[in-house]
Image 1 (cartoon, rainbow over the protein chains, first blue to last red):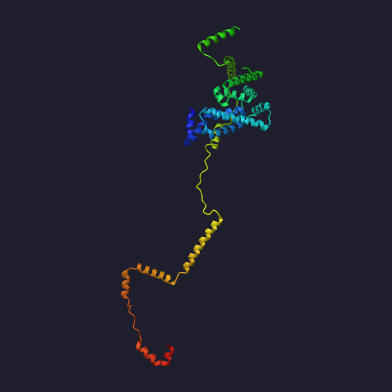
Image 2 (cartoon, rainbow over the protein chains, first blue to last red; image 1 turned 90 degrees about the horizontal axis):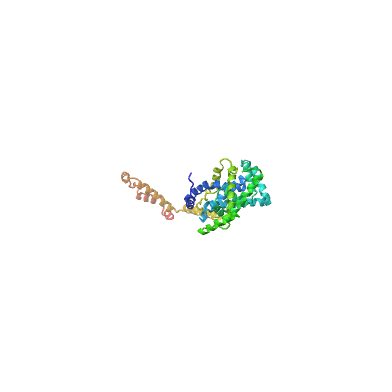
Length: 186
Length: 175
């Protein structure tokens, strides 16, 4: 199925008569990508479900004022990222969780989740990711799982390409060490 | 040492061609290549992240999002209803006026003069005559003796009777 161009979505959205059709096309194109992006950050399916809906409601409300100085999908990614980070911060504050215990809490959620059927290696990788600082985990996810370019990640996070590369390289090293410590060989 | 010398030689030759590189590029290049190799190893062992979703989740997700966005119907602009009677006082005053006018109308109708009533009756009779064919009326009049019948007693006889049966005094008193 041919993917519709972002320019076509934006053009249809600008016309009131075709706005609903445009939004449908946008959802078809991006809802899964955005869901998985959020899910990898917040781990729990129900939390991700709430957040992805909030993100697209924000997109619906603000797409009119979207300026094409960035790509449409990087704009949506940015909204999703901000919503996820805000959610995680609020969760920490609500539960009075010390920062160094957050990864433990998320790991427990991962292990207990009925919507994770990964094998031992996949579980270890996710546990390794949860030991990383939040932003480093975010960058790793976008580079490794979403396969975004550094320039696109820079647009989303507001971080320079050089800093992103350094962050990603460090993340890879840490994960490798974590996995090797558990006798998982590559 | 030998490697550094060889690298410096290459750098020198590259500068002669006019090409340059970002600062610390070659230092970061090593890190970048090593990271890419490790990532390739990860991907060989871990194809996906292991997360799953409920059955038909994305179909329901789209429907949920649409219900909260495009399906939000603007409240219909109902036609503005302007109440005739905004307050109870106006309502009761209107009712009172109506009763007053109706009552006065009935009163004046009952007070109508006999002449007016007769006029009304004459009008009704004329309307009835107007409805009857003209020839029928002419035939009826022709067939009917409309002369006054002669009285059985003449005036002279009446005078004689009175003079005979009443005295002058009685006649004067009566007059």
